[in-house]
Image (cartoon, rainbow, N blue to C red; front, side, top):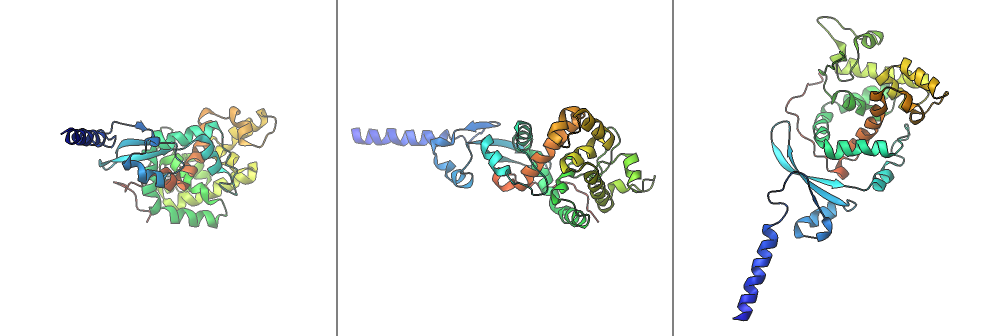
Length: 281
């Protein structure tokens, strides 16, 4: 009798454990301690062995579908190690500012990563070919994510247009045709070629890719002022405080986006098939 009662109590305890599993009715962004070693987490240990914690996040995608996302959270020192020697052409330094944007893109607003990861396959080959023809680093293809989220028809409040967000004057300077009937800023091939040539010109002018990227955002005039105020320094992190507020965050955002796109598997960024996109034909 006692033995049967004991077995019944143990059975109820086991049922209670699984009934209260955090996978059921998971609230928005609940932090789970992976040290508890429940059966449901064994696959996560194998998939994300370096993660210190795991988030489960209820996600709504642009097509209004939803799923339970798994967000591995890594230590700052782990991100720093991953970023060492990240790109040969550009010195992507890791610091607290870059880490803040990594957190934004990989945790707080990771839907951006899902959306652009779904769009990128439709444009990536075009970007890589044009960048290679202009002999500029391939990682610059991710700059359009910061600019427009890979949207050829994006228009900013100031009138910057297209996937690379050219102002009217800059577009004309780069020989893009802008008329009532045609706007090359929205043309994938023409605008990407213009962006590559412009970035290459800025690099030749300032001698550093991060300064060229910053000048792409704020203009070469503002970059010259910042260099003068810094005492002639030719390093982005040395002139950063003299740049406009938007540009101060523009370069760290670009570094974080590169990290997000190149480490999608590690960060569990699942591409979302875009509900609408513009064919680059």
